[in-house]
Image (cartoon, rainbow, N blue to C red; front, side):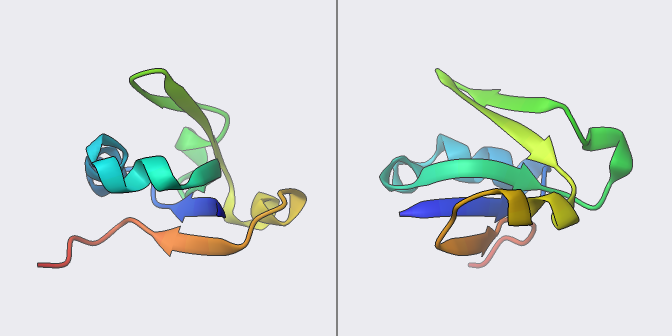
Length: 72
């Protein structure tokens, strides 16, 4: 499944570290913080570009996963 992650913070890193994340084709990470736009988040051999929320429309994806909160 093609996804966009929303949130370029600690919870996104935790998600990328989980085996669950390997089932997804992550297209980009969206974030509202302009200082993060254009950066790249890497975990292992996966590197994913951080884009603005409005730029997600440029990607072909099925769903947006919110990775800014940790749910118990």
